[in-house]
Image (cartoon, rainbow over all chains, first blue to last red; front, side):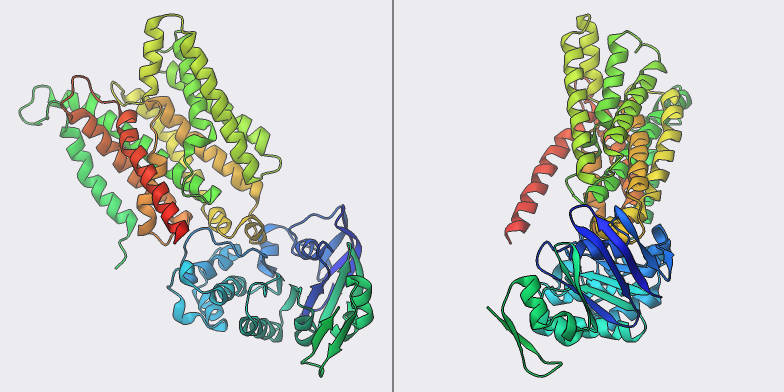
Length: 240
Length: 319
């Protein structure tokens, strides 16, 4: 089911942004700090009411409350867990919109992120990588059609970044749409299917990673002289 | 093996309630004490029920508040509803209406209702937690200042003494009138707080994640204001200020649960009921010249507990 934004405007943060996202793909939202990436993601998740324009899911306005929550899973930038729940308890929070315990879905989500063996461990005892995967399991347990994650790879080392991306790729292969806010342009270039580039609240580029993150686009939006090195799928970026 | 808190506290209550009916400065023997049936029916039973009601309300409200603010140091007294109720009660003393069994609690409930309305008015539109907390603290501070003013301008020394004594919190000389008033309100409040449970669980992940899970911040806040208002407001109306129960009880119960805020509310109500029942029995049994006030007894236990909690949290932050 397509997730689309039509002429989204949020005062001082987004101006007339229109995008159309297809399920089964990973799309990255990139841009400099303050470009409006998190604002766009939160609008798509239905968490910010835009001042103008609208978000459409399958051609219809986003449904309210629990119905929306069943279809769109949102992973915030700050992975806060206020109480020291068990890993399984944390993942089970993803079932709240469905109003059930969803033991099978929770078990499947924990297995998908390789945390089934830590299900009873308190979250406070997890490493950073395990915690990031546990938070993703919470979203997966809700079995949403769309997974929207705000910088899910920040603060993870390269191995854990790749592991988390592999889980998101599996979700996309199962048919979910995945949208990520990413700062690391090389990760976006090598691991996603589409890229939206935002610049000061407007959509500067929308296309494949090679198109949207071309050296010209990086010079225009980030103001950097950049060069892509290496082969497609394993590219590195140098910039000055 | 994990101890299940609801059966545990239910069992402890089943044991404690009969003992509390017998305990007192004079221990009651149902077969030999003269007028035992009258003492039980008119004095000890309503007092025990009132202890259960007040404790259950404070325990549940404390658990819900800590879940809402995601802070183990939160106490329902911080949010202006208890001070608002106390201000209403103080007004009834000031204007000389406190002699009636009904008017004092009604004044207190009006005070609690006023605090709830003010809280909803200031914080309700944005439904933000920070604004809600600040609004509650402002109302608590204002109600406290007005109470001090009422005490300092009391029409006579007797009224001043009555106000100060009442504010210490006690279950002495309470009867079925207070039970009939507080029981339905507290029960309704606990039901509302329990209904807020799933929303509180979602808030474990922060406000944006909770909203993404379908939680309506405005509905959650309304449930919290009404639930806390009914439980704490009716508790203060019949027993005065009884502090620290809402702070201590969730801490004692939390390790027995899976730490979800929703899993804490009913066990905290049961444990709060048990704590206030036992504390009131201790107040009655202690061989002092005058009976120790319940509020003072709980504060004597609660303040060192609070200090211990702060020290432990500081130590954990350093580790």
